[in-house]
Amino acid sequence: MSSSNAPRLIVALDVERLADAVALVDRLEPLGVIFKVGLESLLGYGEAIRARLQETGASSFIDAKLHDIPRTVAAATRAIVASGVRIVTVHAIGGNEMMQAAVETADERAAELGIDPPKIFAVTILTSIAPEELNELGLRGGPGENVMRLAALARDARCAGVVCSPHEVRDLKRYFGAGFEAICPGIRPLGSAHGDQKRVATPRDAVEAGADYIVVGRPITEAPDPLAAARAVLAEIEAAGVHGAL
Ligand code: C5P
Image (cartoon, rainbow, N blue to C red):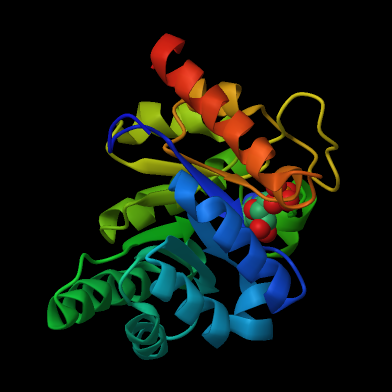
């Protein structure tokens, strides 16, 4: 990456076995990517992969999707903060006080440890929720309206940004400005299988729309050569950064 403001690649370590996750970290760490530890790896072998990431000095994203009472979320955040942990997620639907508890605890714990605090990002509406399900949940309006309302809550709670679809980034940046960051999953390099992702975008499209981070899982982790696949995505990010209409 040419500068610290350049969009970053996050590789999702969504694999069942610790050995496979460790192999991916060892192969891809020299590229300076951020590794996403999601619920599958956190609950399956969280302690071991977190220790390994710390040992290698890699950057990590603990996708814990915290949603509980503020005290519990603060305690969980305290347990997550460690050197190299750059990003932690909470659910915006947990409310302002809960998100603030995560942000404040991350800052406090990092100061105690003498390290940079992780950024707290909020998950708004899961992309797996269909529009009609929003009403079942008692949420008025369509997905776009709900995403923007929850993003406003997250900004007020001093979260660094939100996790959103590449298709929502332009609106998000228009409402909240360039400084409110966007992490975008649902990325498929040209020619790769979509899997269960429905509304996908290429790395280039996502970066040109304003994504600050893109999350790529299977197109890299299931590629015959994950290192080559990750390099190709990085090249696409770089090309979009140079030529894109940001
Ligand atoms: O393999 P794939 O590239 O689809 O992985 C995308 C990653 O982003 C997965 O870890 C998935 O859980 C996560 N994610 C997503 N859509 C969301 C939120 C997170 O695909 N709305």
